[in-house]
Amino acid sequence: MKPVSSRVFVDQYEHRFRIGKEISRGGQGVVYETPEADYAVKIVDPRTSGGGDSDPATAIERNIERIRLLPIPDGLPLASPVTFLREPSKGGFGYAMRFVSGTVSFLEHFYKGVADVEINAAFRHSLPETLSDEERKKRLRFLSRYAEQGNARVRTLALADLACTLARLHSAGVVYRDLSPANVLFRRPKNNLPLRSYLIDPDNLCLTGDVSEKKQPIYTPGYGAPEKLDQSNPPLPRWTEDAWSFAVLAYRVLTSGRPFPENEADGDDWDRPQDAASPSFSYSPADGIPLIRLVQPNVRSLFQKTLGEGAAQPNRRVPLLLWAFGLAKSADLMVECPNCHMAFFPDNETECPWCKGPRPRCVEVMTPRWTLFLSERSKGPKEVLFDLPSRLFKPFSPVSWNATEFRVRCSFDDQTLIPTRKTDLPSETALRWMTERPPHEV
Ligand SMILES: [Zn+2]
Image (cartoon, rainbow, N blue to C red; front, top):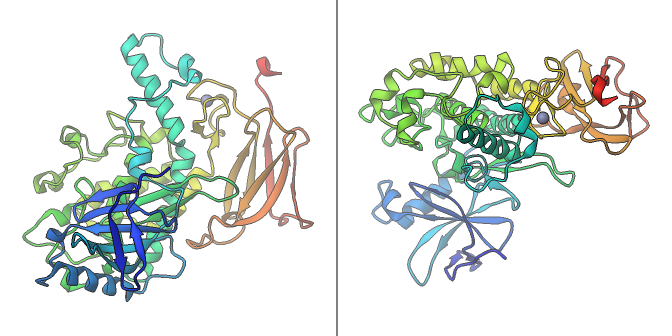
């Protein structure tokens, strides 16, 4: 059962909200679940919500009204504020927002340490013999945790979904401003529900170039764009600040390491202007997996443009729609290893590079606009159902890129891929079967 505290908040319609488990915590307050499954509550820290009003409660109420008037696209996976809340007994205040239960924050999910991880025996044969016992244990724990939290394909798709949401906000002229792992919630695909990323904590949304927002640069330490760290001359809100934060977040979620080696000793407190002046971006973090093992070259170049050249020149950073497109393309060229559950590029490897298990049987589905691999998940049923997404057949759209276009029945034994409904795949669809097994598996 979820822990529920005795604190009760009431909105202007006399609806009562009780406080449940903490979801995320930032400089401006704490977000909690509520027993009402579709809502979360943010309790605001009164010291950070002055905004020119003497009464902080009035300030937050005005802020909610301001956010509700922004041109946020319909149906966006973003928790908009719904109603203002007061706590009659203790004088606290905050707001309620729409929330999707069954989600977990990127921070809680992808940033967990290895302390309590169960070692996955699949990785034992893949490490060099020369490693010391201690180093071997450390690497086994790291790989086991990584696979358990979601392989590179799952992570890349979650980031592509987040990039689509930010791209849609930016195209409406709205900047999110405080992207951090605590502010993104994630749902793994299950029970026919697709993978999804959600943005919460929308207090800082504002219009591009809003001069009234210039006085107060907002960011989470470690994720703020370099130009925002100059307190004496903060820039106007622009999409480029979200692009920077997104690239740092994507790097950390994918590699489990940090993009700027000189900041490793500082933990997450990378917010000193002198560091921002000359960050040196690295493809291979000392404490994580090199990008080259996780993404295609096109995505590595997005990182280079955004965190390398884009450090000093914000206009060189890559717009979020291109991030979404590039990440989705890269993810679709990966398959999951049924043995260790890590992901790899089957075109380059005949065995899993993480556990040395045999490459699963797979099929490459190609159309003139996209390529996607489907693979055997285990030596189980003869036929497997797969969903072919819209991006294979239609121009990439940040709204419908992951919608199912065809559900297909796939047999790797018979090399057939047939839609479950009585329609054919478009004639331009080509298939390449990779169903050979290494000799010891025959
Ligand atoms: Zn493997």
